[in-house]
Length: 373
Image (cartoon, rainbow, N blue to C red; front, side):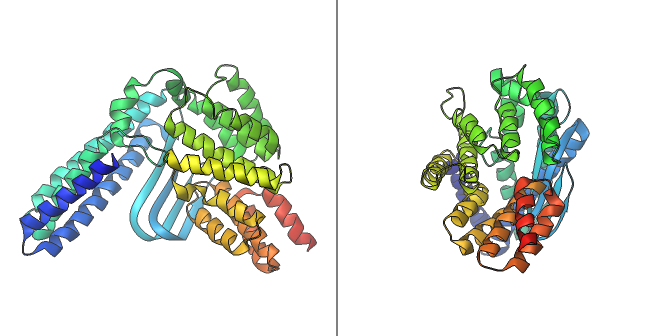
């Protein structure tokens, strides 16, 4: 699929140069604008479709680069970044009938993208428009190709593949509203409720990854890292998991192993080697490397490289999609500053982390250490 994308890009660029010669620079600028326009419309379509058809928008990330402003609630995180040229929308099942709602959301986005791509051909009277229309159309056609990877899912997958989904994968989808209720409890720190929901759902769906994931996160929140590690390692050998699912499982195994080492519950040499091996396998399966920055930051902190830990944790915090994720990365930065003797800077970071997820044991323990200091 990656090769196909590059071939299409090359054809669009060459075609635009030929069509607009000798005034090719505005045409190439139109290529870039068409690509960004269609990607933005896709995300806007998913957001509007989610509202219309009863899905939850979990996060809205606008732009790339450093974070300018963020708004965080228990159910949603909205982030405005320095260069507002792209956007990312996260959606999940909120009510029963998740497949139908998701297919409708994808179809709505496709219709919107098609309308915008068609409208760009009205601008072909200029060199810029001659670049805009082919790029927007090519981008739209690529979005129709079914593709599901650890970092993204295409509109074509929502509309052409999802309706045919059966077995455990369909069960994962349809059980999502019940699992989401448990994850909501977890994110607000109500671990008793999260565990109650897990025990209720696992009776009906003992093999679902999302259900097992709820068990893993609550075990980590209870600081039972070895229990969580044993659970997630047991998933690596399951023959029913696809490449995308295995990528997430391996990345999760790495994260839990590092947390166990940091908490003193697992030997550092074994835990860090396990984490590196699992992350390498996850990358090979398509897991986006930037999503591992939080885990890599804790690894650097354990190894005493505080500057690297702060840098990686900063990147992870900038790309965080949940309040708890950002709080955890801020605490890694705070601990790195503490290791370097700068408790004042550490307190600033810990204070922000406390506002986001004060119930987290890692946040609470770090603030307690800072108060003693």
